[in-house]
Amino acid sequence: AQSVSQHNHHVILSEAASLELGCNYSYGGTVNLFWYVQYPGQHLQLLLKYFSGDPLVKGIKGFEAEFIKSKFSFNLRKPSVQWSDTAEYFCAVNAVNNAGKSTFGDGTTLTVKP
Amino acid sequence: DAGITQSPRHKVTETGTPVTLRCHQTENHRYMYWYRQDPGHGLRLIHYSYGVKDTDKGEVSDGYSVSRSKTEDFLLTLESATSSQTSVYFCAISERGKDGYTFGSGTRLTVV
View: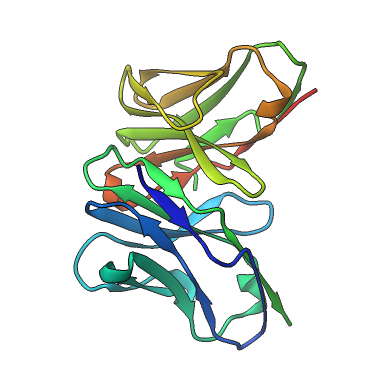
């Protein structure tokens, strides 16, 4: 079975600060990796995904993530956060050829102070 | 995203009553999923479908059943609602596993 661990439950930053949210997964096989964002009162939206190729992937709104296979990690980064980035962020993983069933981390709440 | 809708958006029901939540997609995606979201637990998979009439259990399937008689509709039924099933329920669709999900807007269910 796969599992996902997000190390930070709540992160508070000031505008223009840099962001890095940690995500580690546990699974012995080949995986697809995702980050989703959930703005207050809304549903989850896909930020970015990795399934093969360049381990540094870029997503929407200036976010990027790096897959480090040796560390089973897929950390999310943004060089300069904005107040509008205040949201909850979820890391997710699914095993290749497993009907796309994804396991989600518990989420990290990001609060950006103006 | 207009391609997936959930109904109802909110529901309050009494303990012991059956409840059905509906997920409707217009994307013709093969895969459909039901998750529940609870504080501190992220999202947990209840059931999923990989085609018409093809469904399987997720990690928290006890007390829930599903049906998919058409590509576009995926129904989640709480056979006899309990207070522990108070949650926000999200439906998601995917064309292929590596694509990630498109989520519906969710159903907030309260069991009293």
